[in-house]
Image (cartoon, rainbow, N blue to C red; front, top):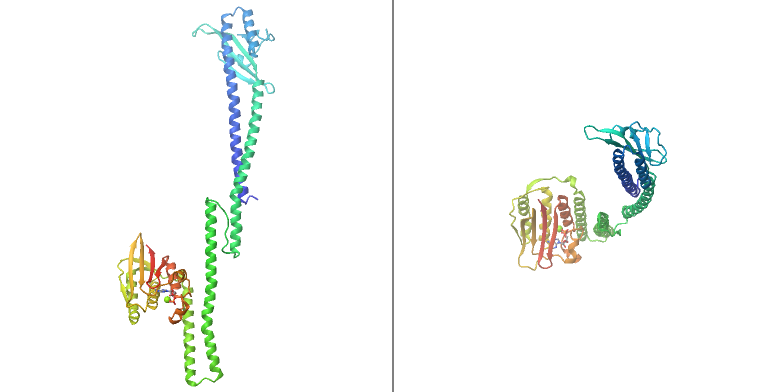
Length: 462
Ligand SMILES: Nc1ncnc2c1ncn2[C@@H]1O[C@H](COP(=O)(O)OP(=O)(O)O)[C@@H](O)[C@H]1O
Ligand SMILES: [Mg+2]
């Protein structure tokens, strides 16, 4: 039950809300009561001091003191008593305890010279204050008795209880609306997540290329965008894989079909001996084609990161060597290769794979030369920008049509079937090149115009 994000969020939110409200309530209520009681006490002490003054200046006039205390009792609602130094009540503003002996801690303290106060009782609470009645100056201070004030606190408690109810009510409303908003917030957070979970589930079942519709700009929105991109990318990869398998099957079937036709013709026995040799030669050619194609396919599938044998090599050395190896082939087709690579840079790479990559690029530039041009050229150049090394292999060959550009790296793609027939190839070279670059974490791109030429650009981050 506490496993879902939503429940957890709601619990945490509610806990925070209630703790805060509880703390605030406690502070408000206790502070309110304390300050009101303090106000009260100060006010009564003021009265008490005045009464003590009157008592000390009219000590012999008990009647006057009693009248004054009666007046005070009437106006303030609290009882004012004058108690002599032997704790006997001399005057009682309410005229009840006169003549009796009263000892409580407040009286005792007042008779020993200091003010004191305390709250008594449980049901009807009572505030008791006592002030000493003194005469003489500081050096010969004489305590003649005490003024005791006894005041009911019922009104203060009533006000306190009323406030407490109001605070509880407001807190309840605030708490409930807080929980409501946290519910909304938790829902707003968890529902798109649940949507994403359901969507990922669909993806994992193979519903590639679908899109989840979450319009948000926050992290969840970003996550949705990423998952959508992933879905599209998986879809693209899956489609490519299917087409690739289709293409492979087709490529394998064509030579097999012609082998079958040739051998069937031979089996019939009507073929003259001279033609028999010719047919068998064709069969051998087809078998060669098949085995080359299969070994290229194997090269492509075997190219995995684990098999990479990486070391730091001076890239210009690898280029120089490969160009030397390829120059005779180029020369035999009247193609001139110029190596203008200058940068003295060491790159972490698999030397053999880099060589294979260059061989494929140069081979293409030679194969797809433009025979209508007076001179066919291949140029290799390198650049260093923004901590990136860039190698360009450009030719002035026949170029690639714009609509074919996105497909040339996909494998088994060859532009224009008619042309593909006359030029040997399987459309695997650039797929291998692409794999080699991506295994190294490099990038390859192409810039080409039909009739003008092609530039292959390999970018290596340093
Ligand atoms: N330098 C180039 N000039 C013109 N076309 C090229 C060049 N390099 C590659 N291509 C095109 O890209 C396709 C794929 O190349 P690649 O994978 O090497 O296959 P292949 O060399 O077997 O044809 C080629 O069939 C060709 O149409
Ligand atoms: Mg090729």
